[in-house]
Amino acid sequence: KYKVITNDNKEYPVEEINFDPANDVAILKISAQGLIPVEMGDSGNLKVGQLAIAIGTALGEFRHSVTKGVISGLGRGISAGNPYQGYVERLDDVIQTDAAINPGNSGGPLLNSAGQVIGVNVAIAQGAQNIGFAIPINVVKKSLDQFNATGKFPAKPYLGVQYQMISRQTALINNVPQGALVVDVVANSPAQKAGVKVEDIIVKIDGEEILEKNGGLAEVISKKKAGEEVKLEIWRDLPAQAGGEIKTIAVALSEFSE
Image 1: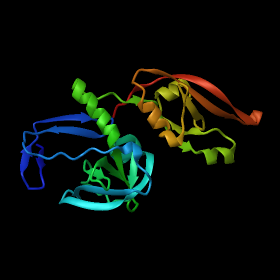
Image 2 (image 1 turned 135 degrees about the horizontal axis):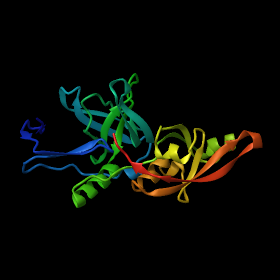
Image 3 (image 1 turned 120 degrees about the horizontal axis):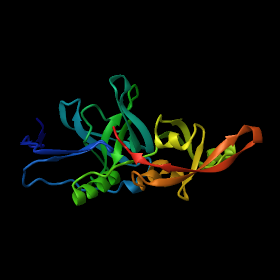
Image 4 (image 1 turned 60 degrees about the vertical axis):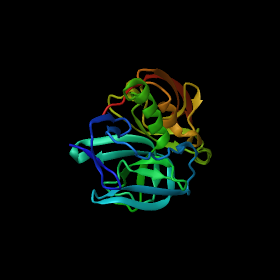
């Protein structure tokens, strides 16, 4: 059984739960009146270094704990969970913050200095201090819009690569193009079936450049639909030719699943 406890210690039984596993969020339905909703902000205009405030029930014991920090990074890709317990999920384009986030904070809001929600606290880095992550609120709003319109959450398109973005400066130094450097290809994923290889650099998808300043690979993939065929332009190193070449590969994106 689940319940919602407000800051005046009133308890409301949860009547219905709808899960969005692709974004690691859920909607809880309760019967209540007079609740004051938080104001949704815009996570598309965030800057590294700006103030961030996290609220949650730290360690499942300390209700309404408030911590303060800054936005430490944007567009991060993380694997959340415990591989030894058989549970790992990939979250792309998350916000990194040094506002203290502890077990029990998940689902709490990450706020800006105006008190607007800019993210949903979701994970922490084990073995580190003050490295926490939040799902951008624009991702959540987009998911909620479709849920309100259709009664179900959108299927998340899935390519199946782990990558690292190559900045303009790094590209110039190493004489390679800007894009997403593939560091691993997931077995039986659409990327593997299409022939994408480790050390390929994805430079365009359907003609759209993959640039760090534009949100990187995750942002471009998020605009696509599960089942849609896309064209990847990749740069592949060819040592024998003392250079590389651009190849075009067609990939049918699948639906993300746990």
